[in-house]
Image (cartoon, rainbow over all chains, first blue to last red; front, top):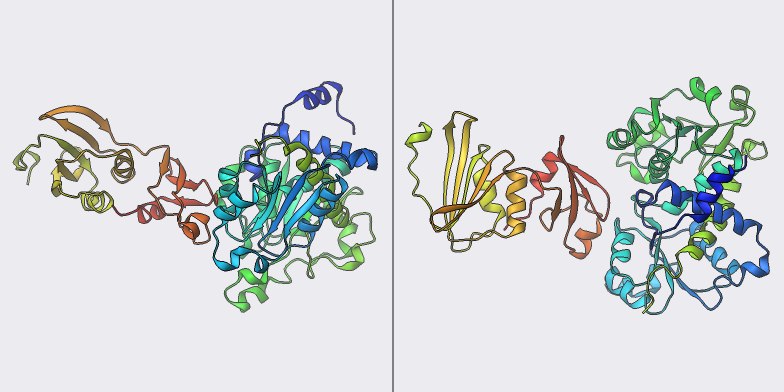
Length: 323
Length: 152
C-alpha cells in the first residue's frame, strides 16, 4: 500500500532532528517513518549514485561484544555508501583490554572518524558515548538494554510486507522477559495506531510488568501462553530464542526450552498473509521446514538491516560538529 | 510525649525538618554531609497529624541542592524550613523531585555508571515512586530507591 499524498509530503518535509541513535524511546513516530522511507529510497537507488553518499567519510565500527548480523550489515551498508571502515570486532585487540574506559576510547576515536557505530556489553554505554562524543553515535546494542537499529529494521520489514504498521496484529513469542528486541518492538509499536500485541510466553518468561504498564493504553496488549488460540488472528508472529545463558539453574531452562517450537503445521491455522519474523540466531524454535514457505520472513528481515542502517548513516552524518 | 512537650532549642541558622516519617531522621543524617553542623533529632514523637513522626534540626550548615533532593526523596510529606538569623527564610512542603542527579546509585550492576564511576542521573515518576536511569534505562521501585541513596 502506498502512502497517501499528504502523508508522503509531510514525511518528506519532516525534519530528522536526532544527532545520535541510542534508544527507540528517543525516536518519534515521524522520525521512524522518515528513516523507513529513506531506507526504501536507498534500496531503489542506483548503486553508483549510492556509493557517493559516504565518499571520503570514515566510519568507526567498535564491537566490544561479538556480533554477526549487526556488524556485517553495518559494514555492508558503509561499503555500499562508499565509506571507509575503521575499528574492531574483538575488544581483545583494543585498549579496552588494557583497562581503558569507554569514555576515553570514545574521546579518542571521535577524532579519527565522522561517525561511530558501537556495540558494548555494558548497559548505558551508548548513551554515555553519545553524551561525550562530538560525532554521531549509533547504538548497535548495549547489553540487555537497547538495540534500536534492530527495531527499526523490524518495523521496516513489517511496513514492506504489509504496506503499513498501523493496525497490525503481532504475536511476540518466547523469551519476553529478557529479550531486548521484543521490549523495544513493543515500545515502538505503541507509537503507531491500533496495533494489537499478543505476548505469548511461558509463565517464567512473561513480558516485564513495567513494560506492559508503559505501553498499555497506547496499544492493545493481551498476555497468553496459548499460541494455538491466537494464531488465526495474527499478521506476524515474532519468535525469539530462549536464552540459556539467562538461567541460573539449567533445570529451569530445560523446563521451558521447548515451550514453543514452530513447524509447518501451524500454517493450517493462520491467515494467508501470515508471516514469521525472528531477530536470529535461532536454535530450535523455528523448524527449517518453514524456511521455504511464504510465511518465513526472517532472512529477508535480516537483509533489511542493510538499507535501514544505510539510511541512518546517511541521515546522521553532519548532525554533530566534527572537531 | 505530646508535641508541645518536646524541648529542642530553636536554631539560628540552618534547616528544621518537621513531619518526617518515623525512622527518616537518621537516614537523612546518613545521606547528607553534616561535617561540623550540630544536629538534633527527635524520633518517634507523637503527632496529631501523623500519629508518630520524626523532627530534625541541622544547625550551622547550608544544605546544597543535592542534599535537599536527598531529603525530598526520604522525607516526602514533611516540611523543610530554612532558617536564617532565627527567622524562616524559606518553607517547603517536601515532595519527590522530578530528577535526581548524583544522589542514587543505579541498582543495575551492569550499568555504565557503576562501571566507570559516572555521576548518575534519574528521572522520577510519582504514584508509585520509580526512578529510571538516564544511561541503562532500568527502573528502580521505591524500595530500591530508598536503598540506593548515596551516603553523605
